[in-house]
Image (cartoon, rainbow, N blue to C red; front, side, top):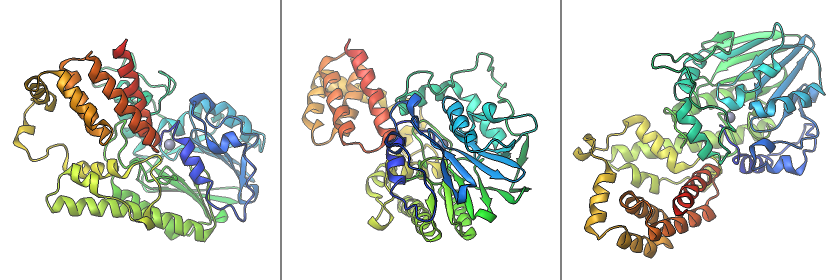
Length: 438
Ligand SMILES: [Zn+2]
C-alpha cells in the first residue's frame, strides 16, 4: 500500500485491535489518528512502539519501519518513505544502537524501500524476493505515469512522492538500480544471534511480497498482504493484476505458522494467537468471497458493471473499505482474468466511447441540455451526473453549467466517501473543474 490520507482510517481501524499481553507505548493522538499531510504522516511520535518483550520496535508513519534486536546485531524490516526515514532512524536508534546486519524489504513499493540509504551501513545486507528486480524495472518504466497518478490518488503536492520520468529513460533502457544484494525465490532463512529470520515468498499485493517469520518470538511481518481495510486488489493509480488467490494462499501459509503477533507495514500489529487467527481468517474469507462471487457472475454471463454493483460483503466478512474497495476489486478480478474486451464488437475498434458520447451530446443540442439532465439526476445519482458531464465537457470543455453540476456531483460523492483513495481522486477531479472555471 502506498497511502497518505489513507493512514487515518487504517490507523484508526487498526487501533481497534486488542493489545493484551504486549507493551504498546502510548502513541500521541496525532499518531493514532494519522495525518493528512505527507510531511506530517506519523510525525509527533515520541518513541518507537515496543513488542515481543522489547525485541521488536516499530516506528509508525507512512509505512512503518521495524527494528528487531538480537544478541549479534539488529535487523530492519521495511524502511518507509524517504521523507520519514531520518525520523524513523532516530526513533529506533534511540532504542538500540547495535550494527544493522540486514535490511529485509517486504516488497519494493517506495513506501517500504525509501529509507534504505539511511539505514545501510558498511556490511549491511539488503534482502528481497527475486521478483523485486522485474517489479522495480516495471515501476521505473512507468515512473512518469505513476508520478501523475500518485499525486492524484494521495492528494499530495506534486513531487512529494518522488517519481517522475527519469531524464535518461529511453525505450529499452528499463533497468532500475539494484537494491537487494540477497535475492531468493521461495525461502531464505538465516540465524542472527538468538533469532531465526525465515523470509518467505508471499505474493499478494505485489509479486515480490515476502513475509518474515521469527519463530522464537512467534512474530510474523506480513508486509502489505494485510491492512485494516479490504485490500486494494486493484489500485486506481494503476497496477498489474493482484490475483485474489495469491492473497488467499499467502494468508493460509501465515495462518499455518500460528503466529502470536502479526506486524503489518501499515497500522499497528494484530496481537494474540486467537486474535490473529480470527482477523486473518476473516480477511482471507472476504477476499475469497469477492473472488468467487465475481467468477460465478462471469460464468453466468454478467457484465463487469453489474457485478461491481451487486457483489457486497456479507456482514460477517465486512472488513471495512477505508482504503481498498470491493467494487474496484470485483473489476480487478474480472479484468485480471479476462482483460479489456467486453464482448461488444464495437469495442474491438479504436473509436472511443467518448466519440460516440460526443455525437449524442450534439444530437441532444450540445452541452447545455446534457448539463440540465445531469443537474436533474445529480442529487439521486451523482455518479451518473459525473458521466453526463464527462460527455458534455468533451464537446464544450468550458461550458459553465456542465462545470457547475460536475462540481456539485464531485462534492456530493466526496461528502459521502469513506475511502481515502476515492477521496483523493474526487479532490483531483474538483481541482480540474476549478481550473477550467477560471
Ligand atoms: Zn505500503
